[in-house]
Image 1 (cartoon, rainbow, N blue to C red):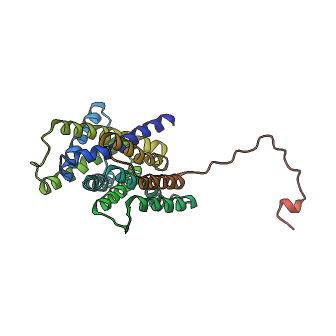
Image 2 (cartoon, one colour):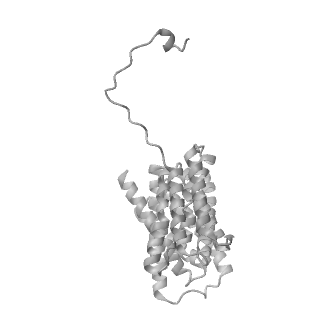
Length: 308
């Protein structure tokens, strides 16, 4: 269990940094084309990994029916919304918005996986929503930009993909699910990118291409594979709790690499969001039984049987 937690922490630290690296790359590549190139590199890595270890399983028609919406929602919609949003939203704000993913996962799990919605979840959701108002609010009231809408879409599609992946890994192994869903998603993104965004509008800087390929393999390929394996082992709820750390990682990396200031409003908003998510997704500790407690003497028969 400890090993699983360490691996999930590694994934979330990489994904938190991805907001910053994505903000850098979006200045060098058009958003959908950037997504298509990264997904192509990720797909090649995953196919090579699965082929070299001969771990790719066979698919049934029902598996494919799960993989197609997973590729469309978790790859095409998610990646397109993510990089389009980063064109106008800074990395810290983007990470704070997507920190609502654990609550969204919990709600979707209650609807589609029949998991229970607790009172803690309701209170935590309200607290986190208040935090979002702090993050995206302006002095004249709440003003939502199109970039923020895109980031909400990226958060929601990511949450939906977790639910679909959880159902899919009940049928096939996580590696097979990760490889095929990424490849299917890539095949959907590439045609859209080629039609909408000319391939001539790409960066001429070698460092940008290196950063693109490295982040594709590490953050989308390797971390995606690790996450899906641990998702099957410890469950969607426990895994989603680790997503709470993304805003803090994005803040730290953004400050160190881009000099992005962390405002008081963002700090307060992040605390409310993360606090709400932790409250909503946390579980009460069971009270330990008292050892050595003397047994009560048997009462009258009427007491034991509920009589008067």
